[in-house]
Length: 219
Image (tube, rainbow, N blue to C red; front, side):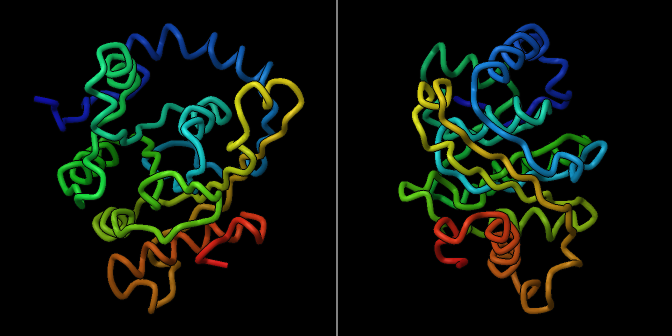
């Protein structure tokens, strides 16, 4: 039985994070061609929610590594079934989500992460976009924002991370763009109508950081 419970302690207290993150970050930042824009927009401390588009499996580690942050992510429950991968995923502070089921238990775990003063990484689309263009966001982020309206949301745009890792190492370029934090109260009245409308408001702020061809349904 896979536990839905997130560790109550910050990621920094997980031994794998403490031991491996610093050298891995040094290596990745030296090798991978990713440019960070808008780092100054990050709040000085948690809790807050990083809300990002999702185009490749590399997005979560690149966000954490590029921004030098300990971020808690949901990971699809299947990842926890493999001995080595499951161990690594758990040791870096991720917690399981059952995709396509409106997994409220995972959302409750996410609420505990925020209530613990930590940083939550959230991909409102729910899965990777094969085309690279934004898909309609699912109402999960609206659920979180409605229950903790005091927690800032920080929009992130991942651009170019769909490229193979070797290409990013050998001449490819990607961009991680950080937008200005906002709160639920900053959304329009129409965007605060319900959880889906809130999510759409969040997605529009992500879209504003992306090139036109990546804005998809929010273009």
